[in-house]
Amino acid sequence: MKDLTINPAIPITLPEMFEGRHLINGAWQSSASGETFERRSPSHGHVVSRSALGGEAEAEAAIAAARTAFDSGIWSRASGKDRATVLLKVADLIEQNVDRIAVIETLESGKPISQSKGEVGGAADLWRYAASLARSTHGDSHNTLGADMMGLVLKEPIGVVSIITPWNFPFWILSQKLPFALAAGCTAVVKPSEMTPSTTLMLGELLIEAGLPAGVCNIVLGYGQPVGGTLSSHEAVDMVSFTGSTTVGKTISKTASDTLKKVALELGGKNPQVIFPDANLDSAADAVVFGVYFNVGQCCNSSSRIIVHEDIAQAFADKVIALSRKVKFGDPLDPSTQVGAIVTPEHNAKIDSYVKEARSAGATIALGGDPLNVEGLGNQFYQPTIITNVQPDMPIARDEVFGPVLSVLTFKTLDEAIEIMNDSALGLSAGVWSENVHTCLDFARRAQAGTVWTNTWMDGFPEVAFGGYKQSGQGREIGQYGFEEFFEVKSVVMRIGDSRAPWVPQD
Ligand code: NAD
Image (cartoon, rainbow, N blue to C red):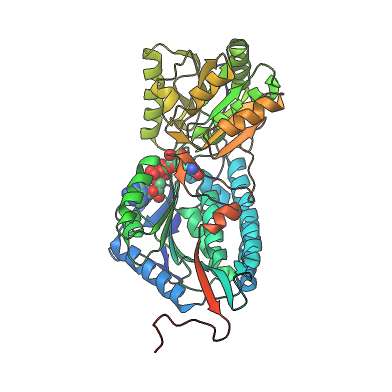
């Protein structure tokens, strides 16, 4: 404990409790039942928000509003220019409200304030990029089908999209989906996680201010059941776009199959960084530390396992341990903090049980390995933890632990590294560290992962598609590929002139 860097609580006045209501057809509404639920800050323990608890009635009303808005054509048939104008205005408003939104994001999620500001401010760029797509959408024309024929392939908005989001990046993940759906002309019903509902509502306020017509984006607050279940089963919904755990993703896929609605899934990861002896080891060690502690490891892209060449494994682990001691854990409201709180006490206990199980199975806890008590805030934190002597079949090496816990595995040859990497049900992202371009290219082509980073980690851009192989997901998000998910494709085949030969024999 003494050799870690811990930021104790700073004296600060916490904001007033945020009161959240559903946004349905342009109006803020309480639940018919009058019921509410509260979110307590994982770091500070006080009640950050009280939200209306949605049920089937609210989910149905929101879907009906989105359906009516879509069918009216007010948004689905608006010009790309008009849609882009609204999206650009939303981007400006997000930037004007970063501080206000970021404090609530930090208090509900436990993440450091600097990262909340980065997440919210950075999301504006996703809205701007989506605005550019709204104006450049086009299909195909076929002008070589013969002198009397012409074909058009039109892109049309898929319809009403249910958007269900997790707690770990509530504002960012919503912004990876909603502006793209809106740019395509869809209408939406959004259900944020019950743990982080408020910043989605703050975005809802900005959508209204930007002039988005009533009913085009609706927000329903509440739990997976019944709200999420209704959003994924309802006949009037055309697509579900979900980010969350692989377990819930499978449930949604089954639920949605009754109506054969389209399903896009962004799920969990067990993402390796593979380190070769010829790599820039200082840079690799820094990226490993960033990869495992960013968002307290509660990140789909968490690099929770590294696979290091055995010749350098001990020296590299020592570098990572030395850097880990310098990372600032503690009060998320301290601007210098890099790693904040764990989302719930239950999740903290789950992380701890993975660590203790690994130790019982023969792995070595080289750093940390216990919950962390932060002076003035309590113990819903976890120590930076590095586990060596990990075998590929241990749960700590295979499951998404979702905490600041790094498993260190070793390899002898590139083939062995690739075998260990790909021996996983998940395939979200992977990284390679080597100064040899051939090693990097070979690795990139053989990795079963939706994103491969070479000599970097977790760099992303609105232009570049994101998603998972295997059980890490279905479909893609952001970039042109992500945008395309929100369209139906319609072929229009046209005859020019009266050249059609009769099918029925002529007398
Ligand atoms: P979760 O699956 O528990 O919940 C996600 C959302 O689904 C919440 O809004 C929840 O209320 C809702 N939900 C729960 N049960 C449901 C049901 N039966 N039907 C419909 N909706 C339901 O996930 P979480 O704990 O909030 O988030 C952490 C998980 O998300 C991790 O597994 C992480 O890897 C994953 N994640 C993936 C990405 C990605 O882009 N691949 C990004 C962030 C998080």
